Image (cartoon, rainbow, N blue to C red; front, top):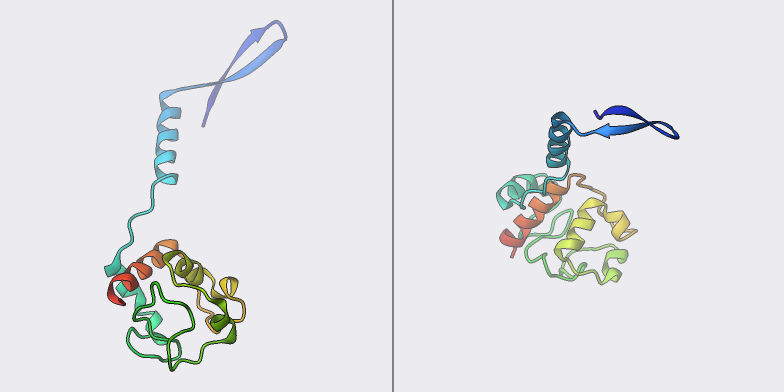
Length: 138
């Protein structure tokens, strides 16, 4: 809420915003809420979230999806014994943190034609899962 005052000048009336203590307080609170930095990735929380991934994946064995042991830094589509989609095999994608984030956001956008369809909308959830995979799935 911005309070205004009018003043007369030779051209006519003008409206200028008045800066009040309330305006400063509201602006400061809004800046703190909307510009707050994201919290650091949490591997412990990521481990809990990863349980949802275990319907298809495991750390140490192939299942509906490939195992995740050593996923960070690995070239996509290279685990022996898993039947990857031709699209993922041909992608030559390296599983960096950035690529994993894009993948978890929408696998079909990153590699059209891949088998994976599951998406994780929340950026903090993705960061936490990736942090878990970096440490636990070495």
